[in-house]
Image 1 (cartoon, rainbow, N blue to C red):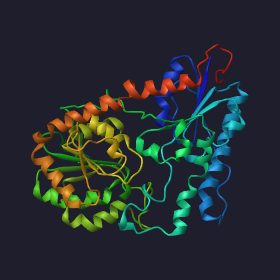
Image 2: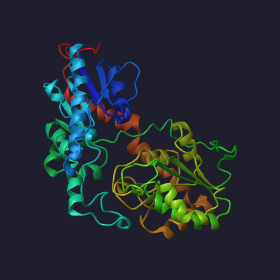
Image 3: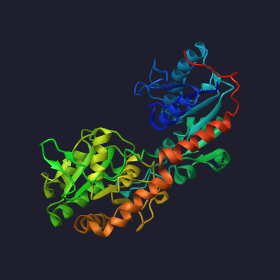
Image 4: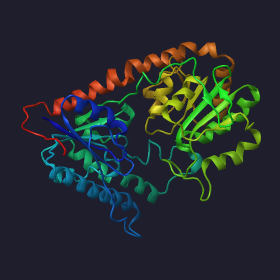
Length: 418
């Protein structure tokens, strides 16, 4: 019986559907995660724990590498525990972004490894330094960015195969790794994310938004400039003034943190942007919902007259693909990796990230002339079905990769995690 180990700090994350399918096909499957990992039925999950933090006053570019190595060492204890139960994976599929995969070959030297390449950091040509509003980086800051790749480079060097979800994300990797690289996007569940004319969103005050009024949606895990939050807020006053019936739904967290520039100490990006544009907004029509359960978020996307997805050149979010699957009109920034998905004027719109007026005008058009964009909305879902449907594309590609790396099924290897 072949055996697979999945390693992701937030398991199941990108790997859950693959792990479940392999288990159903007779593989022995286990997973390693941090405290934020969630169990999947039938798959033993071991959570690593840190016993110490990073060294005080360590050289700044080494902070991330030390933290990753500490997490890697903690994850090895979970691997040892699995080994002690007789579990010997033929295949390890891991996300090395937090360091947990770094030392797994010390416990499972014979296992083939697949490293998920979600992002390889660049001080130029990606997210860092993209937005002039936050100033250029010093040489020291660029060194810190480059040093984030220390344990990623170790993981990719050891991997038998590397998987990146989009051509842009694949292109960030050094050319020397490309021979072992596959582009596989995990895709989205188009049975869940689908058009729903009866969809509705209930607001905290009891009001219900549906398709009877134009609703503009915006989704961020955390509201931040890297995902265009500042540009979107600046586009709203003109929209709300010109389209008095328009409503705006912002789904996500107002917590500090995120992937990009930090908000000034003692505030959040929401507070900062409302201080700038709030006096010009009709806040009775601007609704910050906080994070929503997945089904409610999909309902919001199905209601949407226009869904705004802006990003620095960074990781592609599931929310964009789900919005397209729901036949929302997607209005996106003309940045990577969106160019890998959006064909402007065919399945969505691409606008200059920094042109606030262009975004305002596009939103006004979407709200006032929804029928003009009907074909784009239909084509958006067709794009997802053709390229990003999890069952039709993502899962078969992952299964082919796994079975290609571990072709023999003679019962001599692997084992069930006890």
